[in-house]
Length: 374
Image 1 (cartoon, rainbow, N blue to C red):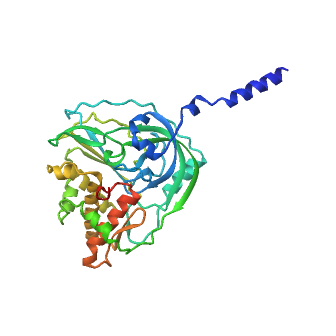
Image 2: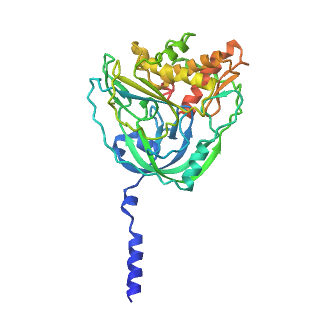
């Protein structure tokens, strides 16, 4: 009799959801992006396609009608995973910046490094074999069910007043431009899709190319590469830019809007390059790209310093093409198989094909909205 009662008690308990399971909210990328603040600090379960690229480590959405239709992905500190962006730029306000910000304290998380996670991490860190220069290109995208803590905010990037003065900072991920970040706790139901990189020399449509030309304010000239290089400062110069080498796939140790360090203009730029994925000419092009972002943010021109993300990335990729030409690359391909430069293109086709390739990459891979098509 006692055994029977014990069995019934155990069976009854097993049918009751655990406190953790009861707290997990099933959602979608689009639902979260529609109101990210309402999910802030909550544990969510999302099924979606995860991409890794030059500046991307995100869960894609489709038809969300947001500036970025994706959620940034991060591993908990100490995970030591392999997947993540090849280049990463994080902004912070210096201690000496006058803006008043509220720091949010979040408890540390633990990631279940089971077989599904290891498959997930391995697939997303498998490099693609391509001809020519391919920045941050990996072989697969991965579809999986992810569970983790959702960090959500309304404002992203540097927040400026009507006069262009920086009054705050928000956001997550590269350039602090993502409204939401998922800090991963578990992975399941992993499947993968190989990316087609056999599109070298593909000519863009006139519509795509012309749409891209709308976002080339002050189209980069030959000296744009020097401007990007100068943004890192001279050796030994303290200009608020720090450069590290490694993987940028974890929650930063100082995950706050304001740092304990100072900067000449109150702005700090933390740059991380994955040296294993960016070697030789690829590193030179990466430096030009990230340097353009830093120089643009610090620009005194309001038309450059406050560019929407689509325009900011378009400028940086144009500079990257100039850099690819200078290092004598035969082709420059972006993650997802988007060709933005080829020596085989005629001068008359170069502008159209380059702009079309950048537009296709930004819209279809990075999931950044082209406002000309809204």
